[in-house]
Length: 171
Image (cartoon, rainbow, N blue to C red; front, side, top):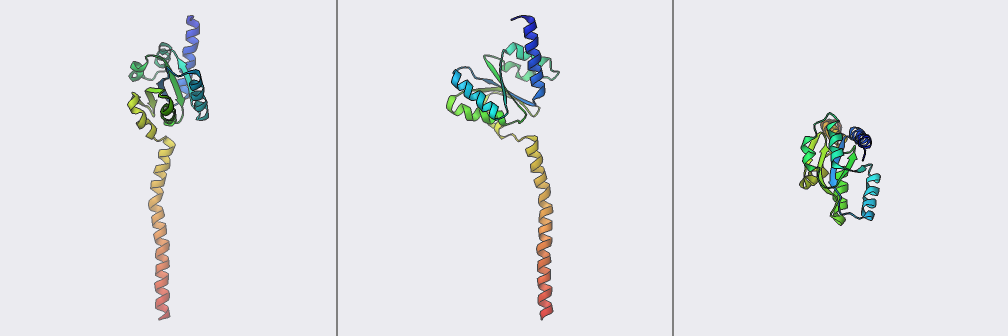
């Protein structure tokens, strides 16, 4: 491959890395053509972009982004498929579901919510990660809970006081 071609591919990978907030490195070696097609189809349905790249080109692209991705460089061995997503746990759920039947893809590493996860044993942790929007929703629900309790107590208390006053006035 010519140097110019490599430079173009590196810049495309860099652009893709910068346009998504999360990515997963997986090993999909050993999947046949039908399984890869099914995996790509599931990725498209889940709004996940899948790329298969050479490790050296990916490393050069990551080094040129300005972010320190050095913790995942050791994971760049064998064939690498990258899953890009703007939802942190979507690729983890897809990998877990797809690998039940196919034993692949295997998680090598992930960059999610500005943290690094290395190794296949991190998959369950990644599945349970909540997105920022889910966390904001949980916080809002927690903040609204005491207010709702006060309002309902005032409403029920008002009915109780009214009932007591009505009973006293009738006597």
